[in-house]
Length: 547
Image 1 (spheres, one colour):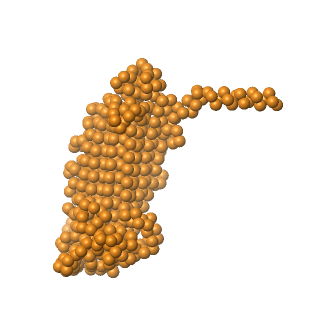
Image 2 (tube, helix red, strand yellow):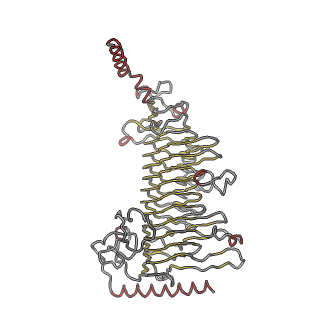
Image 3 (cartoon, helix red, strand yellow):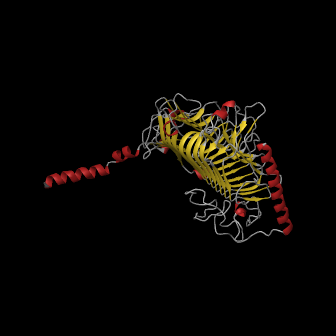
């Protein structure tokens, strides 16, 4: 027995001291140095680094492997990943050396090719790399055939000058990041984009896959047919010619803490900073959206066709063409269960807002009541400053409550009746739902809105460039005047105040702040008169629609 224990302990000691076993568990580290490396080297150490991206792309990698590019190096060419890791032990494509001083390694091409491709592979972590492709495409994360691309994380990377020119195709043909699948069973799962900077590009992040509209023979349901498990967090998208984020064919997604600034700079297509089409069960929160320029669309909030069970919350929107326009299309659209809550819009007023519009004409819309409306749309506890007209139509079971609407005296919130154009085709359907406990200040309200407030909201400040100006002061008449719209109204307001059973009107749900801005008597009278004048104008519009 003693001899057995002695042999056993010796074996344990030898195994624990064996570096080969540890190396196998951890994978192999490959170093790449574009200045001092050589493709004839082993690549297994910094002193024996490879030199080119071509050499890197020729190798097949296994879980735990690391491909590390030297800080400050520049690599020309393109890369297609070979081999898969796991979520727990991914293959890493990253950097070594002092990236703070020398800069991130640069991967670039001038050709019209995909610069970096992760296709039908899984378990990859890409971090601390700079990508640029002036005439090509950026990073494409894709699957086709029977392939699955899962557990991909891209973080702390920079994408710039990815086809920063007028684009030959619509909807992101040349973009920094593409997430797309094709085929009956090919899917993307668990894709994370985190803390990446994207600027001077035609597009931003584009998504694609199976849809009821474009692949009807393959589509089963959103849960079964869409790609799933996307997280976009901490992205900065700036100076984008077209759409910054196109959400398509995705189920179960979170987009949070992102900034989309100065997007939709070109006007040759209908574009918006961030919009969904064929998407379900997603949340967009704590994002800043500002400076969209395209007059054809240019709205911060946009639920398009086939969008269901989706929410925008805690959004700070400013200086866009408009705040919101949602589109429904045909008999199969069925936009439903979409919510906008606790958002702040400032100076999004170049064109009117439309809570739901029927985008294409056709007599068949009158044959399908369900598809021609947005169903169960909720719009509550939002604050709109200097807003343009807000048109409420094509909505069924809608709930519009606890909002603050301020704007030019000529601007109105209007409820439209059911009308058909002169050719008997395009139709506007009447508003169906509840509009209650909203504040209208300086703009008109629908004559049949319930429990309306026509008073100065009592904001704490007047600086329109500071979102904190639109918290309510301790003396505001809107404190505690909101209603409970639904059982779960979220965890907090725009400013991080925890929600209780008592609600204010507007995107601030706290107890009231110090520092109420003084408002003169003449301003109060002028604002009150303009609100009532707007109500009269709106009433005439509604009567005309009915007649």
